[in-house]
Amino acid sequence: MLDESRVDALAADLGQPVAERLLSRFLAEGDEAVHALTEADKTLLNLSELAETAHKLAGIAATFGALALHEALARIDHRAKSE
Image 1 (tube, rainbow, N blue to C red):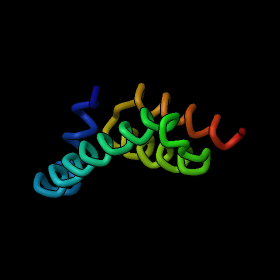
Image 2 (image 1 turned 135 degrees about the horizontal axis):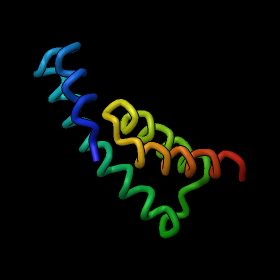
Image 3 (image 1 turned 180 degrees about the horizontal axis):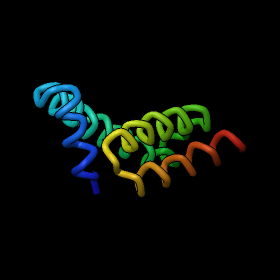
């Protein structure tokens, strides 16, 4: 799911420890965001919060080259903002 060349480039640019911290943060925040998005109907998450969560995770996904995830989240973000 992640583009290994993007992850390697981040490690080269920022140093391995920083890249590892960013990847750990992405995974943790990703889990939280996915949970929030899947529970949105149950918790009546408003569209603004939905868009914000999707937008944030889409940006992080793009950073690590998870392009399919980025595109799906960008569509959620766009749709939530247009409602």
